[in-house]
Length: 203
Image 1 (cartoon, rainbow, N blue to C red):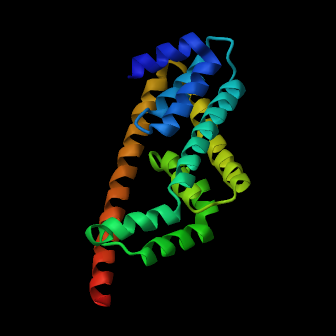
Image 2 (image 1 turned 180 degrees about the vertical axis):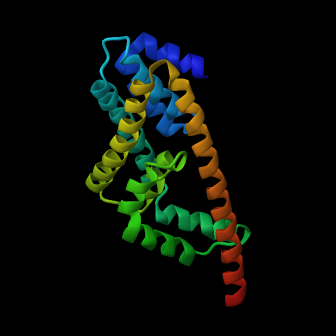
Image 3 (image 1 turned 60 degrees about the vertical axis):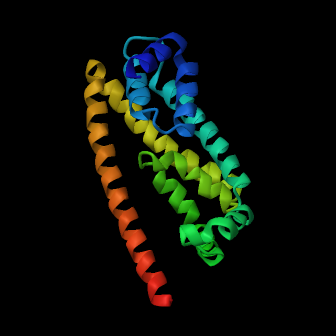
């Protein structure tokens, strides 16, 4: 996949950066680290500039985030309640759980969106619960853009700085991503254990 990404970017320039980053947001397995660091490297031998790559990648990120936000709007709380009515016993979830989660996101969602834009995998998927919680679209766009600009700027400038060695940065980012995935898995397991014990104590 890495070779295909770099070939596509070499052929289509800024538009290639925009399109690939947009797809990366909708389909997280596409590695943004490769797109952004190689985009930075391209500025060392082509007419592309770091500012142009940052703008194109940010526009692609925001476009992809808006798509997922729209999906979240379709999967609103009311529809989740209907799913809970059907499968809640199997999932061990209640309507109250859904409303608590929605209330939490209403309270902390803005900062969650900003922070999660810097975390692999979650940086894309966080747009869905933002849409589900009916977050104000203007605020969603603002904080998504801020977080995205920070992430994109760092990787593009690093790619431009290291030049031919841009692939080594991808290797370091893979390590970072792996560490994050392990932490998320541990947090997820801990949350499940806590929730099961909480439900058991209430019963």
